[in-house]
Length: 136
Ligand code: NI
Image (tube, rainbow, N blue to C red):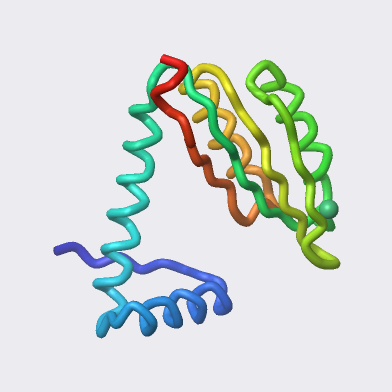
């Protein structure tokens, strides 16, 4: 075992602890180990995407963060060949949700989702491949 120390916003930690309680964890460390395992699994699942895929990317972001909209639009234009359609929902005063329908090369799609995650103000970006096999 190795020990690490991490910094988290208080709100995120409280949310995490709430989830741990609901799931019945007795130790925070065990919860963090499991969270890291599923993070790695999710990545390896995405890394092994077939050549051609179709799916949706859900993104939640704070539209008030400066430069966010510009960067988001810029990124979507850069990947326009895989974007089929976009649905926008104004969730509340601060938060927007976008559902982006993608179709194309699995590695391009993966790259696109990774790029979205690096934009400051993006709270969540997740790819769901509904028909991974159909196009390959
Ligand atoms: Ni909005």
